[in-house]
Length: 390
Image (cartoon, rainbow, N blue to C red):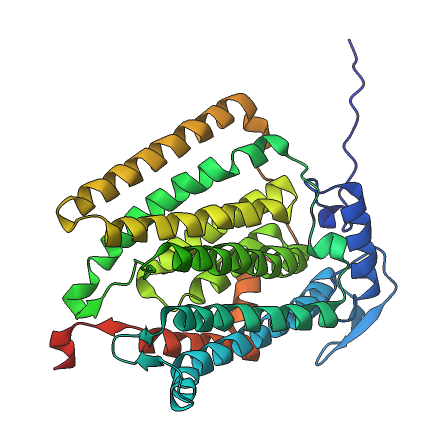
């Protein structure tokens, strides 16, 4: 008996540039923007193009999709590299020079280079830390918006397209934070062998008003600014070259901005999870909520370390990690059992391979300059043990 089998239509170049986890408005607006900016930072390729391009030693050849993608990706990587280099230079100024300038002006603040720590009036120290993170990110966000002119519906997608996964984002972040915290402690335990002082705990305020100030500035405001830039502008812009590339770049950028060897793994894996959930739920609100959880977890661990009696501190900390990991695991397993179809992501294949794109990034001049300065600042930020300083 014959059966009619419908052949699946061949996937076109434009089909490859649609995002099934976003709504139709997102796809249409993004498509129009890419088409309008295909000569700069937008990647748009339509088959049967009559365009030709000149290649030295070959002559006139048909314009290939790889040519479009490489050209646009180079522009985007240059923009990201320049913006992050600006952030690093601002961090250098606010860390090594601003406290000295304020101290000479009579303010109670100073920076200890060898201990990599600010001392002085607590509110002033927290304010300088806040400005150090907030102001450069705000400036590069404005530069991003003015440079790419990407519509806000794409830069900051708000509509949640996967509510089941959105509901489990906080437990998933608790699980991730707990596991990464343990791994960071293990890796940090190896640093003293090289006379380096691990810095996986955050300095905590001494009273309730200072703690509230810290939560408002470092947890709430900084989370919103960082995620608007990272999982909003940067992730959405790079997604046109593939979701996997966008995840890797945004996670690496945020992790390297810590300038901390002992916390790099924690920040990178946390960024990958936040980015994955952002893509799968279709909303930057997921990223902000998970960032709240991520930073809140970091400060909770530090609070236990500094406030609990050292005799019981390690036991309480391990109990806290165990409870949060198990709680997060239960919710995640339940979600996967009931809604496994809502978890997976089909990564879009583009014309260039992931390896080619990463190599293109490593040979991009602004990216090289940013990576070099980041490595230098990271090395300068290492706190050495007294024995090493003798």
